[in-house]
Amino acid sequence: MSLAWHIEALARQKKLPKLETMMTGANKSTGKQMSAEQMEAVTRSWMASRHRKK
Image 1 (cartoon, rainbow, N blue to C red):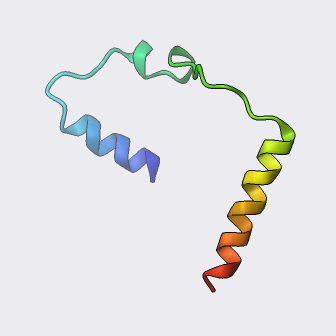
Image 2: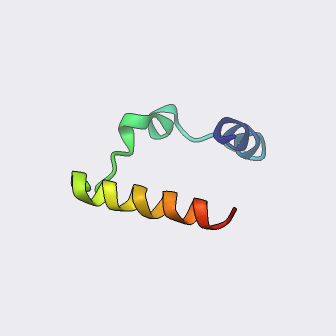
């Protein structure tokens, strides 16, 4: 789905961005990395909400 979105978004551009700016390594995330406990809590919360909706 991400690939389809990017293909369509680029097709609508009058001028394409430089390849370097589109490469994954060029835009490194500056966000804080989550600990194992935080990842587990997020996963448990996500799984619990999925089970409630059924």
